[in-house]
Length: 599
Image (cartoon, rainbow, N blue to C red; front, side):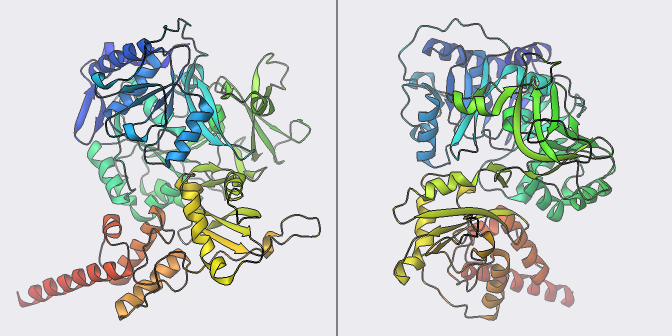
C-alpha cells in the first residue's frame, strides 16, 4: 500500500510538465508542485515535523495551500486545516485540543494563528520562526496519520478525527464507483477542513489530472458556474443544498460535467432526475460516509435516474465493509431498518487525544471472519432495498445536517448555556423558504423584563458568533420563561415557538415608503420567514445566506424580469439600496425598449 505523497511524486516524474493545479489564471506543473513541496518539507523536517506530527495549516484557497498540504505529508506530518476566516476563538480551541506545535501560514494569515511555537511561512522562508528540533526518525507507513479533521460528535464537543494514509489510498486507488479519465479536471470547492476535500484534492493529483481551485469568499452561484466552465471542469462534487440550488437556477451551466457527485444529506430524487434527463451523458454519484470512515463508505453511481422516492446511497466502496445491525448488534433482514456500521481500511485511527471517545465509537468488528479488524458506529439508520442498495433514513441520535456539515445540536446548546442569562436550551432544525435546513434555538431565561427579552435573541447570536463557525449559529433564538416538557419529562417540541420570527437586527425599523420598497419587503419576508422587515435591515444580518440569496434573486427576476447576480445583493444588502439599483435597471430597460421602438 503506497503513501499518498509518494504517488504524487511518481506522477510528477511521469508527467513533469503537465499542469497539476490551476487557480485564477495561475498554474503549477507537476514538477513545480513536487519541487516546491519538497523544499518546504525540508524546512518542516528541520523544525521537527515527523512521525505523524500535527501541523496546523492556516492558508486561504491558493496554489501555496496545495503545495503546503503535500509538503506536510512529505515531512511525515498530518495536516490540520484551520480556516483563517472562521472565529479566532474557534481556532484557538482546536489548536489547544490538538496540541499542535507546528503551523504553516502566509503573510496574509499570520495574524490569524493562535500561539504555536514553530511557525513557518509558505511564501517566505526568511520569515520562519522556529527553534530546530531533533528530527523524528519514525518511518512513515500506511498507518501514519495523514490529516486531522474536526467534526462534532455525540458529546457536543468537536473532536479531531485522525485519518491515516491507508484510508485515503483505499479511497482513490482503484475506485469502482468512479471512472477517472486522463483528461478529467476536478474542482476543489469544499472547505479543506471538510473531509470531501480529501477526494477533491488527492484523486486528481495521484491520477495525473488537473486540480482546479474555486475562488474563495462569498458563494456566488453564477461565479461558480463560470469557474466550472472556464476551467473546463469535468468532475464536480456538490453538497446536497448547493446541488439542489444549482439544478434549480443554473442547470444550463452543467453541460460540460461528465461525472457529478453529491451528498452530505438526503438528496431530492426530483432534482437528480431533472439533472440526468437534461444531460443523458452524465454519470451521477450519491456519496455517503462519515468523516470517521474517510469520505465515502457507500456510493450509488448510475447513468439512469432514480425511479423511487429516495436516492439510494448504494453499496460499499472498495476497502469498506458495511453491516446493518439492530440494538443487540445482530444483522437485520433486507427491508428492515437498522443502524449502519462500517469497517475496512477506511476506518480512522480514532479521535485525537480522546481514547475514551475512540473506544466508544471504534469497536472490534463483529464479523468473526475479520479477526483484529475494527468497525465504526455511524449512528445512521438505513434499510436495504430489493436491489441490495442501502437507503438512508435519518439519524439514530439527534445529529443534523446544516449546509452539508454534520451538526450535533448539543454543541450549540452547550455554548448557549455558558451565557449567564440562559438556564436551558433546545436546538433543532427548521427548513427555510429555500428548502435549506437551518438551526433555531429556544432558550429558557426565567422572568426577564420585556425590553431585555426582546433583544436577548440578537445578543445571544452575537455571543455565539465569537466562538462558533457560521453554520452552527442559529438563524433564530427564541427566549421563553421555561422550556415546556411532556409527561415523560422530555422536551415537548410541539409546544416550542414557531420558526417564523420577528426582526432580529439591532437597527431601528424603517417602514417601506414606495410601492417598489413594499414589494421587495414582501418578497424578503417570504424568503426569510421574518415579519415587518425594514428598508435599512441588512439581508445577511437578518439570517440570509447564499442559498436563500439564490432563491430571493430568482423571485426578483420572476417578478421584475430583470436578471441580477448574487454580487448585486452583496453590494446592496438592504431593501433601500436594492430598490434604488432595481429602479435604475428598470428605467434603463424601459429606455432601451423605447429606443428599439423608435428604430
